[in-house]
Figure 1 (cartoon, rainbow over the protein chains, first blue to last red):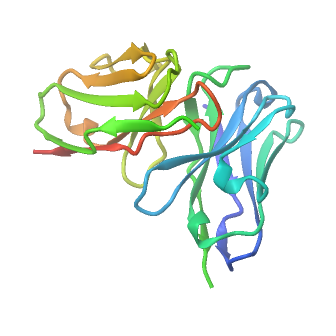
Figure 2 (figure 1 turned 90 degrees about the vertical axis):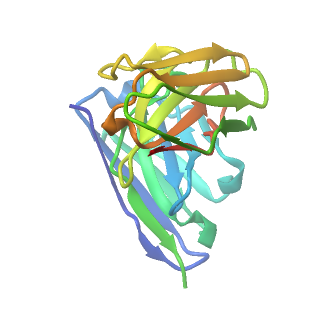
Length: 122
Length: 107
């Protein structure tokens, strides 16, 4: 069974930084696009960033460009999201998600972690 | 960025009903449209990918259709476990925007 486990969430002051991690297991991590999706309390899903299976391409939603950086370590089977200059509106549960099929990012996300809560508040 | 608009935002229905949720893209996205179900406090679950392909393990009462800008998710006979929030998501171009969600409630 595919497993994705996020960690690194917590309470941070506005302007602060956090690094989220997603540990992957039971699939060939290096063959899949990976994505971060967030959900503010009581709100809908928001796509945040994704990264190609080899790390060569990365994409971000406009609201986080220049502040967040997605990365991966295929040897460690881990996905990361470095979040800087955090704002109150970044408060959300952050999910890592795996593409449905290897090498493609066009068929949705078939596996999700349990999510990690990031709260930005003074 | 491509905008995704779902309707209705909420829907009340009874067990056994047939329900349809629509999703409209702000530009053509071919068939790169996915549907998810989310229950409170849980991660989303992929139901349909590529507009009409049923994800493994998803009951056949869920069907998706459409192309270009207009898509639908149909549940043929609602079961108690289907009451949840449903999201569409385009995977045609980054960012892979989601619709605002449709909350399906018990009548």
